[in-house]
Length: 242
Length: 302
Image (cartoon, rainbow over all chains, first blue to last red; front, side):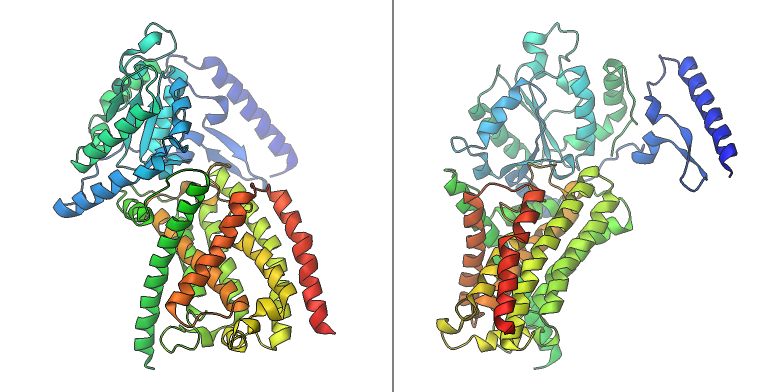
């Protein structure tokens, strides 16, 4: 392709994207300009079609992942309960209660609890207090990237009924409409001791084989997704973020 | 000895080293915790973490090389184990050390890293790419004093064979390389700090830097394989310096004590000194350790 042709092509593309921007229906899905389906010119002059959202993520729905049989699952559940890796994502004011958990006074490492920096390696998610709509979007993405089985601890009264932000325009009131919650830890704010008690409760649940909320999420996926989309207006990601 | 019997002993030895590595990593983490005034993890935590990782149900792949990354890393660990004598003078536990020499071990040290670089690169996460760039830059800097030290040893003993170098150090503490060739010894011990990957040289994989570096995308069984190869590498890195500098080991108790102390030395330095940035650590290896390494070679050249 000669230089002249490329210039024509670029001009054509620019016009096309300008048209798209003008005619975008805001009630439909909200897509950032850089995430739109488009054609790009590679360094060698060839033209490639890209659709960033679907090139980077899988759009597949989650499926239920059945537990193993009997003794094996019990043994694995014991291991899971003794090795809880928490995603280090402070979502609200309660995240200030998490660092003391790892310090000499409370030392959660004793109970096999560790912080992990990436959702791929974590199996517990602490929603620490109020959750703004903007954060909820990130929380959903992070939750869906965690491998199953995964658990959610909801910290503070804000996650139960909205707490002192019950009438705020930007926060959600009930977390379990949007994500399945395993353990609620009430209080405003709960102290690290309460958080430790919550972890102990979570351990009991996992050992009893009740930590199957990831499957519940997959089972009721459409319902959860409808609730999430109702409140997140600028939904610009695939339905399920692997 | 029959090759199959030897293979069986080698596999058993690998199993022992894996479990010793898990126990040692727990002990060292407990020591760090006690320094910080914490109680620390239970000593069996690494085994549970390993089980938990194997029990993770979701497994995602980013492609063929993503699978091979942990496998390459594991191969690096196994290679280091296979071609180094675990116990000197033992028919059963000297593995296949007669088949390879130090150059091969140095290659296996790098091999796992390169495999990991390709695998983590296919993961596509930007943090992986940054982690790899940092890791390889630092490794290149560590290799220089380490290679200089080893060349000095090779000139001293006129060989690159592990078995011969260990054999030359038998017959008392005074024969250990650390006393017969102290300058090369110090060079190698400084390089060991970097090779062990504890603070101050742990920027590459520290969880509180850009999230965890190369293994960002690895989870479940992949992470389990990475964990096991990590602990084996820890023991074998220590065994490398044990064989080069501290007279090797003639029984398992000696092996355990020496590898533990060498690892403890790097952890001890780690709890005292804070983490270097990558440009600081690279420059650090190019200063004193490299100068000492050149000096160690010059002494034996004239």
